Length: 516
Image (cartoon, rainbow, N blue to C red; front, side):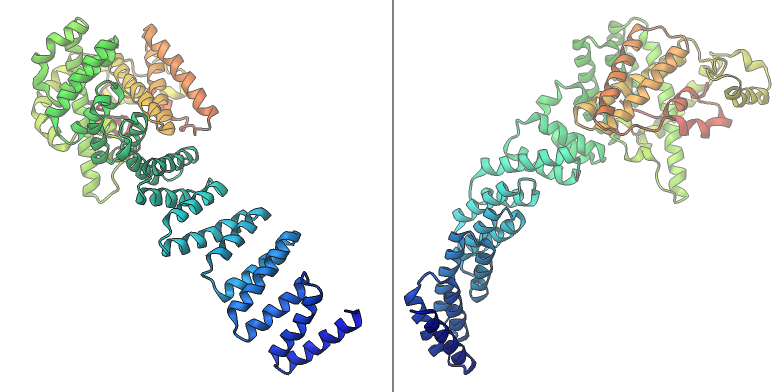
């Protein structure tokens, strides 16, 4: 056919279209296709005319031929436009949706491909083609592996179809992404719960889950998993200490006592005598009547340590009683509860009921304890002594003359607090709680330094200081935020006598009370 004849046919076809005679226009275009079946532009016009005549099936057939031709020639954008025309006529065409998604994928338009595959998956699901849906969901995850919602959809689908292992694999992959981004801990805890329901032997994950619940103060859930992993807990001093602390915070003193006894035996087996003694100390804080029952076991660990633990327990109970009173007064005034209320069980004060029961005994012992440690400044009027404490920071940066603790009693108390923060810091670290670990380790570092400043030459303290400094440096390199630098002066300015009535309010604010 000559060019002239082609132009004449095209002109005639346009005239028929203007007159609304679409069937005659189609016949004219078909004459051109007989001469050149590969003319995609003519086919596209025919498809458009079929659409105007409401002959949808014929229009779709021609559109698909055009889209396939454009794709074969590498004109992907033109092919995309044609596929979209088809889906406007029939959005439920699964094959066309899949071809369009594949075309987006070939073009590197990942977001468009994922969106189209998602539409395809929904359509397949409505038709009950679940195996195909699983395949499409897998492809979506492959295209966008960082999309957590896509992994969740695939995991839930696999779970529904009985593909449990694949579902758990997807949950684990998503949990690792959340761990790296340190994003929503609540969502991470939910994932851990789903995974552990099918893989209960994943103790490392269980430790992380317990750590999350402990850090947000959800003691009920933390205790649930501590009990579920009891075999793991009984061989892990950090978890056993946490479990005992939770029971103590819930006033389940007998259960807490049993756990602390187990903790003491565990530390003893590891050769950590200080930690074992601290476990016995927690029992004496809760249950002062246990003194006689524990005496032999304490003396076996360290001769002469019984009286020291009794004194420390007395001081700790006084601190807990004062702290509980302060919090109660804050509640009565309608003020927000202090920070201790949200701390993990091992760092929270004892329940009010326990403190109230012990109050008469504390009062009976407090007065002799204060008389037994007279200070040189005791003969001076109270006003000059207070003036001395306020002016000392201006005189010397080292503050050597400020608050001279009793040689054994105050150093020992500070050492116990340092050991508690040390153990808790490494416990948090093992649970993956980096920021909480840094806070506790810096508290321990400041307290140990205070012991050295007071004249304690224990080599174990210097060794622990080196360990803490190494871990803090490692945490800083990983980007863990530093706690405020004023933490150290707070510990160094701890008062000499906790029972002094006129300074009691200030003193209690500076103390960090610990059951652990």
